[in-house]
Length: 122
Image (tube, rainbow, N blue to C red):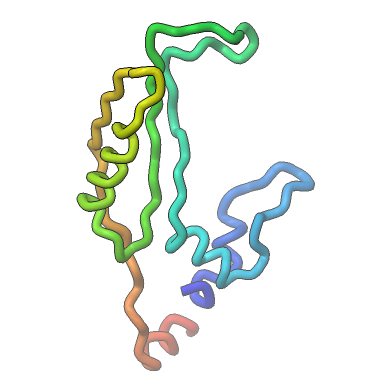
């Protein structure tokens, strides 16, 4: 897949001047983007703007988290494990609510036959 995608794995998004990708090897970049797990906070609520933020107690904080799973990991099973981990040994008796509304299994390209890869390279 890395051969088929070529450097698009690393050039599809514009980077700020001088910034480099973490992985320059295309095969490793593909593995990092498709097979290795990743967690990102994609949104947050209840937080003050960074310009006025301070060390204060808030009544609540919400975050939307995106978790990338390897394509061979069942998303329902992973969701159950993640929920269990987040709700176990919660510090300071905080109240945690976990909802999952966008579960999806990963995708893995099948091994191509020679005739398929030849037709793509033309």
